[in-house]
Image (cartoon, rainbow, N blue to C red; front, side, top):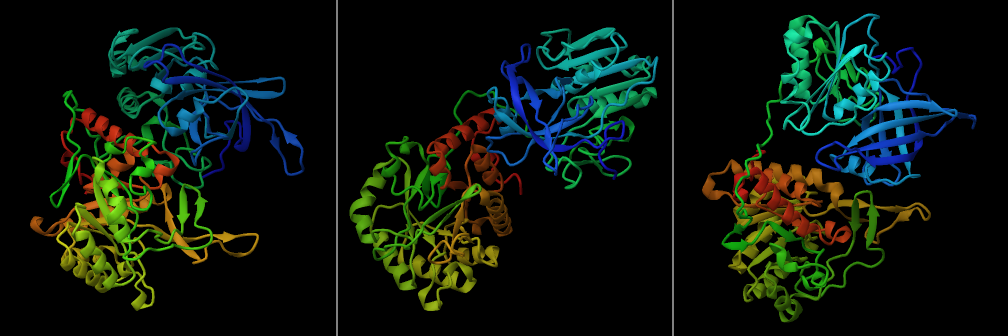
Amino acid sequence: MSETVNCEGAPLPVFTTGVLSFLEEVSGAEPKGSVYLLKLNVNPVKKDDGSLKKAEKPLPGQFYLLKAKRSDTLLGRPISVYEAEEENGSVRVEFMILKKGKGTVELSSLENGEEIELIGPLGNCFPNPAPGSKVAIIGGGIGVAPVAGFASSLPEKSYDFFAAFKSGSYGLEHVKPANLVITTDDGSVGIKGMITAAITAEDVKKYDVVYACGPLPMLAYIQKICVEAGVQSWLSMENRMACGVGACLGCTIKTSEGNKRCCKDGPVFDGKILDFTPPKVRMIANLGNDSSKPDLSVTIKGVRFENPVIAASGTFGYGKEYSSVFDVNRLGGICSKGLTLEPKAGNGGVRLVETPSGLINSIGLENPGIEHFIEHELKTMMAFKATSIANLSGSSIEGYVKGAELLDKTEIPMIELNISCPNVKAGGMAFGMDCTAASTVVKAVREATKKPLMVKLSPNAPDLVGIALAVREAGADAISLVNTFQAMSINVETGRPVFDNVKAGLCGPAIRPIALRMVYDVVAAINKLPESERIPVVGIGGIATWQDAVEFIMAGAAAVEVGTSTFFNPNAMVEIIDGITAFMKRKGFRTLADFRGIAQ
């Protein structure tokens, strides 16, 4: 794996910034507002001795990793060069941005004068055709941009250009071909149909070399007809990237010569070595053609939730706290603050520390006590349409049992049993860390109440699956997971832990992938039981969007609880409900059961 070089042998990639000089919606792109033209003046690079070195002009086919200075994304997005020119000792690079995900939406929303962080130019380039060669250049969708940039570097009318779009056309202003052929799926411009309607294996025989960039199905077709015709092809590929310089191996693609790095060995490859074997997993087809509203309801041990989105314990008070911020009645359920038999003052000192994509909290289960809750907060909670759940915590089995007995006499539909609490009689080790302790407390509470009992598990347990099965055996009607991950923070000025208790609980989007894996594992274990012995699992952990919620449901969760996300987006849960509804309508799902657990 050789060092990244340009086609003349000079190393290129640098990390620098650029200043946005122009951003405008590209006319002709459909749907309207889906593609933007971005022009960037690349700043000089500061050398080790403090001097400045001017940026190098990228070659056709190369790309940059781009990320807005004010960004919520972790990684830069790989964007191919559309045009580049040197002027007044600096380099201006143009990109066409397809608004597709968070990163490209950010880039398409910047204002002139804003800075963009960039690494590049990256990758190899399109090799120039031999003099006198008959050349075909083919672009599909946003893939038109890099091949149009390459075309503009060739002599006018020395090539034929084929452009394929779903609808409309764009990016062809700098193209000066002998022949221009445009296809659109809907027939809005040029030939109606895909690229197959414009060029076949027979047609391609008249060319000596073909250059192409576009969606994988199109590139697979171009490879096929070129191989059949014995014509050389150079295909520009794309893949998810992290480093962009060949270090992480996250962007490898399969070839007949083994794995190749898209960022360093490519993105332009000899077409005949590429492996376009289709993935075994196919997309779920969009089957929605029914205007009726899908059924999002969930029933757990006879308790009905209007939808699967439940406000998580500890983050939502008792419902009234957020009732002026959004319509709490839209929620499927509300979990109360953690309740203990006696009032609890909680922890002293610092209680919150923000961390990248997360929050470390050391609240210490501050609450007014169960009797106060029954007399005051419960009535307010029960007034909402959302199904109420009482979260029961404790420091001893006796405390849990007495608390359950009090709640059993109320109208609360369900109890969520928090077994992440320290067992004072066992030296402070949490009940949920050990199968025996977990099953003991669950069995005791089960005997104290007839209410449906959902047991909330700690992700810090050494055998989470074992504990899940143990609490099911002890009488749990459902399981919720995960609670917070044990974490800590140190004040670099004092050299001491920030929290009085040293360790605290990490929550928020940072924990979501791990929580998802744990939910998946627990569901998989429960699914091995006879159907009559299975219990539902409610997923918790960093859920912030409808896509997050759908992932948990696809992993097998019956419902989800949303917590920390409400702090940075109070409308998060309503947006999740609306997003799941739209997703189900688009896919043709009538109930959550239609896609629950399909990832298993």
